[in-house]
Amino acid sequence: MRIGVLALQGAFYEHQVILERLGAEVVQVRLPEHLSGLDGLIIPGGESTTIGKLAVQYGLMEPLRAFGGEHAIWGTCAGAIFLSGDIHRDQPLLELMDITVQRNAFGRQVDSFEIDLDISVLGLGQDGEAPFHAVFIRAPLIDSVHGKARVLATLPDGQIVAAQQDHLLATSFHPELTDDPRFHQYFLKLAGRSAD
Ligand code: GLN
Image (cartoon, rainbow, N blue to C red; front, side, top):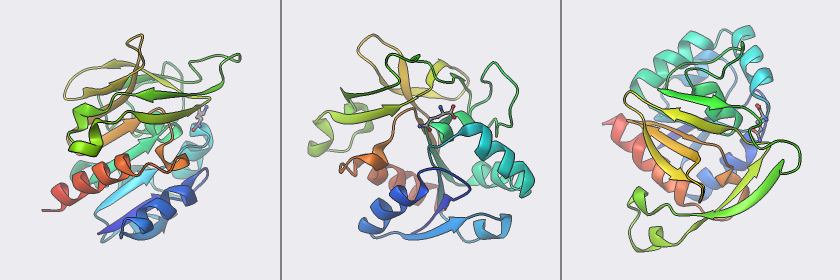
């Protein structure tokens, strides 16, 4: 399995380490030609305005949209913002997923926090039943999921923090910053399926 990590800015290396541990071959993507031959792509956390600006500058917007039409893409945090359809302000978005997102939704006091999430909906088998320890850093909230997208995980108060649309995945938190590889395993499954 060959998986790209968009390496324009942000926490791409942490994703690379987990993917390699799971046996995937990892390619750092900075230019459109780096997308060829990939089975899937991760867009990391970081700063969505910077990732968007650089993607425009490097001519990546249309190639990324075309890639997401056929292959698995997973956006974590800033990456989830970049995948979304609308964020109530003007910045470059891929508009691949039927979700709207609110940036920096948790305000200053609770800028960053960690919480256990129920992810049994992922159907990862026995180990999948254990809660997932999720790290949120100046995180966005997914404030609506419509069209073909569906909710994967919520906070205890019902606010949405993970969504999926066919082979596209968005999480407001950072599974690459914990030792738990289950989200990466789930993504590799999606990438395998869309590669068939
Ligand atoms: N606050 C960042 C943004 O709006 C996202 C933070 C993150 O990726 N950890 O893009």
